Length: 459
Image (cartoon, rainbow, N blue to C red):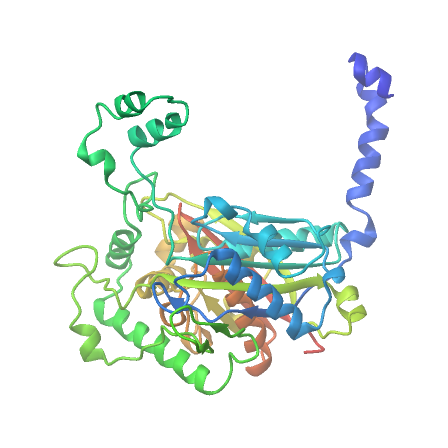
């Protein structure tokens, strides 16, 4: 057969047994029956960029999250088959941060690791990657997570200057080197930080949030109230000790003290929030700095395994990772509506409805973005037009949404947030005595994710 393949004379009839065997290998009953479970999550404290973690590199935070997870679960490096991490604004020295962090955490050098990037939902992609690997029998146990260090962003220079700098090493004389820079203007020497605008549209995400709020009836007062709720819920959850189990203390780079908690939680009053000026569309916009998630440093990690492997390790599974969907829409008009599309697709795929879900973990990119998606899902007109449904998805109960705060209050390290959402969803399922949770988030590029988690009966 190999000889005929090389000569290009193989027929379809000859190929059929080969294709059949490959198909059988990838869909064996044993692989398809594997139940994927969320065992436990861990994370560094999430810190406002430019504060306690400003001198760390991304691999430092991801390494600490992995080491913290392994210490909390008691797993050994030899128990891990694979590592996958989300990372958005990457340092060129450690672009595959998953590999660098895994090695730094002491995992065997034989454990493969790769890094994914999908804006704010990178850790969700990492989790989905391991879910699929476990389901098809490639691995039994892995670590999924993510990281971001917004305190140390890669700064570029203009392309004309970069082109000359790359040629600089080939110049032999001083005059040749000086001649290389002829034709440059002062503007070419101005540093270029990473753009905060969408590449495809040139629009800043906050502007899109403002337009979305106007289109779906979310007022300034609604947004201020939601931001206040998020910070108060995070404060209460911190004081109640809900985050202690997941947090991995790290030494501050500014003091000799260890950072034990998230440092961006700042409850305020409606009066103070209402006094803030619009941050994006001025002077009549409704989105402010307080109703937008802030730039954050942090890393996260979670142990994902087959149910059998989890029991073999002597651990208790917390959640069953039932299903997930990723979606993509128009990045101009529907940039932040990924949760509505993804939730609808997930519920339809699993035969469930909003009333079946007892816990909602919703990424808070902006207060208005969360509320606009809630309004969209509860609108007959919007759901009929955009989701092609006969009726609306339904009203998402606020008492089931983000009861421990969210990205507005604890922070949003882009690559790490997905794991934080899943960790909280599993913990809340037990604490609030519910069966099903949905984790959902928007992402740059008009993309989004929704994941269905079921509380494990042993948790």
